[in-house]
Image 1 (cartoon, rainbow, N blue to C red):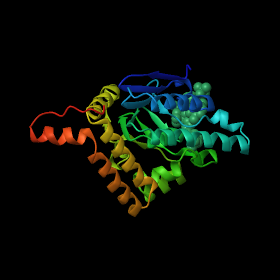
Image 2: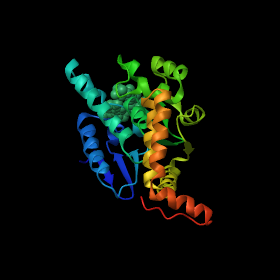
Image 3: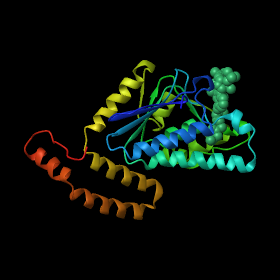
Image 4: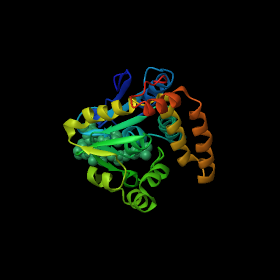
Length: 257
Ligand code: CAA
């Protein structure tokens, strides 16, 4: 599919490639992403996924407004359900997912970044949930994930005013991990991905599952989930190797890549 570029490998990259429409998400693109994510989930050779947008203007400027303008209630509901399914699939991937935000991340674009584990932003990145200006509300999870990441106070104002904010503000609010020069975005994202790819894949999967519980479970249940998850990790060959390597003052050789 032309609108998506997928480069596989230990560090795989998915690029939304509709630069003329600022990489807006229509049904075909969302279905294509869903298919790619299904393959990634079953491909043990992929250890980290980077998601980005083509061109230098946008990560994703939202769901496709031209397509949505023609939708009935039922079609709109189906489209939003598809969007939710895709965002949830990103969140549920067992491997770390990094969003490399190179420009506008608006509406469904910010919601896509919010479904990723880490977000790196170029200095040119601009974020926002402008749906209110179209007479709608965020529909790919923004009303839930945005307050979870940046707090209710800021999320309520952003969703009610539709105003955009820049990369520095996103960093200050704890939405993004790092802000880098535009030309350094992909190299810096790969550098971070390589650092993470050097860890035990099994431990990373368990860490991601336990972190996810902080979003999906009450604190009490989440803490219990962490206790059983860390117990499972104690049974792994990588726990034995990691601790042995520390004691022997050498680098570990992970079995679970
Ligand atoms: N859907 C469809 N097309 C879009 C788009 C979108 N979300 N965003 C931009 N485009 C298209 C424009 O229509 C334009 O196409 P043409 O050249 O054919 O006219 C092209 O991309 C370039 O955009 P602009 O000419 O508008 O560029 P600009 O520099 O003047 O403005 C912008 C950039 C501020 C991002 C502006 O394009 C904009 O406001 N886009 C819409 C952002 C938005 O409202 N996103 C939320 C969508 S709703 C949503 O996502 C719902 C949800 O929660 C799932």
